[in-house]
Length: 228
Ligand SMILES: Nc1ncnc2c1ncn2[C@@H]1O[C@H](COP(=O)(O)OP(=O)(O)O)[C@@H](O)[C@H]1O
Ligand SMILES: [Mg+2]
Image 1 (cartoon, protein in one colour):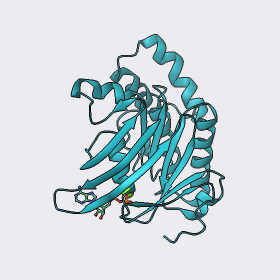
Image 2 (cartoon, protein in one colour):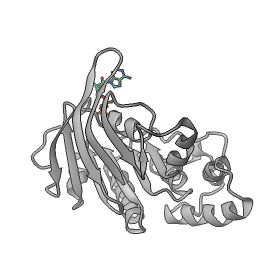
Image 3 (cartoon, protein in one colour):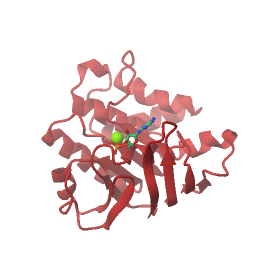
């Protein structure tokens, strides 16, 4: 669950990246956040993960009010989130299995739970035959699926993906979005940031469009009226 009310963000250099964003995402929803480069999409993602703080406005994520949250509670908020980045951010020296298992070790999961859970998520993302490969032995689309498996492995309430298909060809991009849709159907709330209009319009999902730090539309009408 996400609730943003009148969220503004000015960076130290004076750039007003967000100028009063309000939006609510309920548990179980699949939402695309779209907008041209520089419109404020990544700023929203960084606010939701607590990486940066708003200049004004209130943000609640999975029950945590980011204004009130104590530093000691931040790890608990982060555990409710799975974050996927455009550039994958995998560990080069670890194989697929260990990249995903590492995320469970990091939160103190038992070996027994890790042995049960990692194969399940790797099968879910279609990588069960490539568990021993290193990232550099995988295609871009496969690497992104490892990143998605890692984001999912601790069973977050909300998956946030910032331009997860940015470096992939259209066929691979469609596969990644279809995977995100499947994850959503299994019960995880999904927020996907993209500027890929064609891709968004292949799915009938809620689309929040922003431009110049403001929400310009929010609905099920796709991305048709919007220029990148
Ligand atoms: N750390 C930063 N310091 C100053 N300005 C920034 C910083 N990060 C982003 N911006 C600016 O804020 C605006 C929104 O950026 P961003 O949220 O990254 O947009 P998007 O992800 O939609 O491309 C842009 O004008 C960008 O240059
Ligand atoms: Mg961005």
